[in-house]
Length: 109
Image (cartoon, rainbow, N blue to C red; front, top):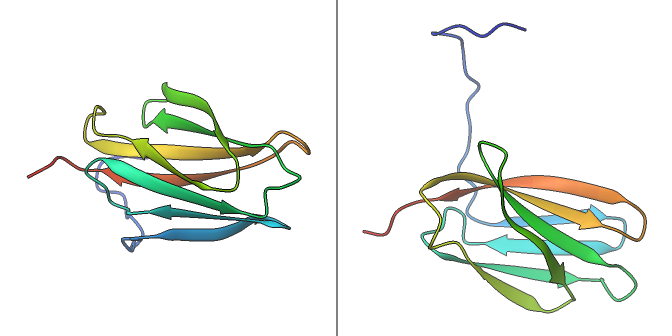
């Protein structure tokens, strides 16, 4: 596919909270989105799972990697990062599943 200037872009919605059942028995909540600094990540149902998080910038560079999510709420500080779009890549290493979500880091006013 070739994209040129002026291509149609789909409508989008701003999501202020991600709450998804990523795997059959794990639920992950991420908020706030967009954020100016700290995001909270809460996992449920991870007692038998090893879930790890990588944070990847829009240009594909890993900003943080292998953050273990252990069934509690974990705060991750994005304030040192530049404003922009980042991808949260959640990996279940016990059965090799993964899923990726997008988060917007904005500057503080």
